[in-house]
Length: 160
Image (cartoon, rainbow, N blue to C red; front, side):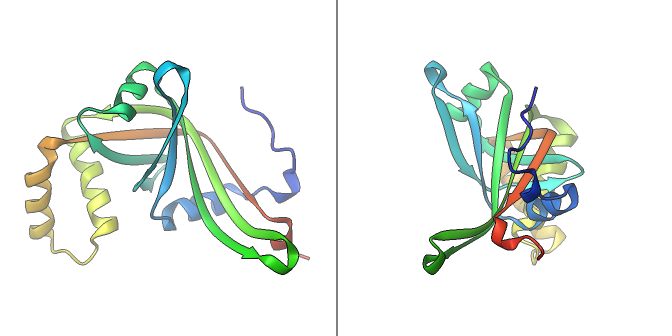
């Protein structure tokens, strides 16, 4: 179902992949768009317990694509340091594959709360609750349950 990484020596462990997902602030969601064309869109996200959460409007290209085909991938670059002298990049990146579904009710509210805590950690619980009440009706919350998680790093970052 999934290909093995060609340069397995450069693979990151599950723990390293999850650390990149927890620390990251944005990634790119790739879906099958209109007419079968790939559609990749940058998003803010939250990762917890093998699940990625994103928010979006209640209508649009991304949501239409996911309703047609819920399988997707999500990429986060944890490090990207260009080394001109070496003609290379010292990178670490992760790709999560899974099926996306829309959240409703308490699941939706919990995912919104997790995003709010991640991106506005200094807000008081009261301020956060007000912001969520104000915005949640206009939001669609999506969850990608990770079926496969892979990560890779530049060979220059491997332990000697």
